Length: 208
Image (cartoon, rainbow, N blue to C red; front, side, top):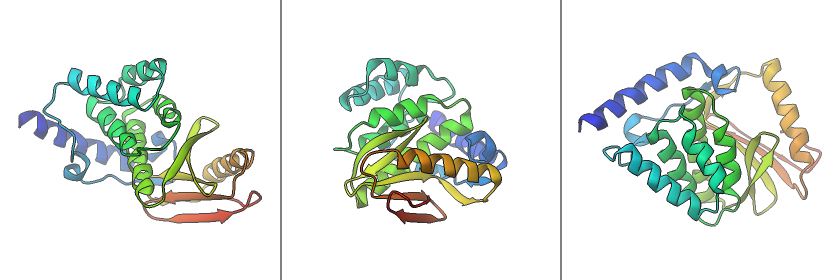
């Protein structure tokens, strides 16, 4: 019970830091949405020793077909807490039938601070929720990012933001992502999804 309470306190701390430093989550001008701690920890055995959590995560990732090298890099990224890693893996495991989940894990390995780690785990949760409604066929690599490709050819980017300011930096990011998605084969549409807004476009020439 003590360990669980300490985890809860730490998550409230993360939430406070994220709202004040969204830039460090690589989304300038946005505010990251932090789920209630009780919701975030649901289904995660926080009383389990970290070594056991890592063992379970490794087994699940191996079952998804993620390479051992990528698993080692993900497990060795200490900006993630064992609970954050478990949350991310748990959400990917919910996406049964989605191919190339290793692309998202490779993307997650690039996190360089606690805010970004929290952000990646929340992204995984959003993708898993989308998959419940519209099955995600596979993850695709878009530069250093990972996006979901639906069966109808739509490429979806999920960002767990309550709102996003349209700054010059975000405009440059969107233009870059748009060009990279357009270079993928058989793209039928593009979608940007956040907790506050959802933008759809259709056709290879459309803008995100």
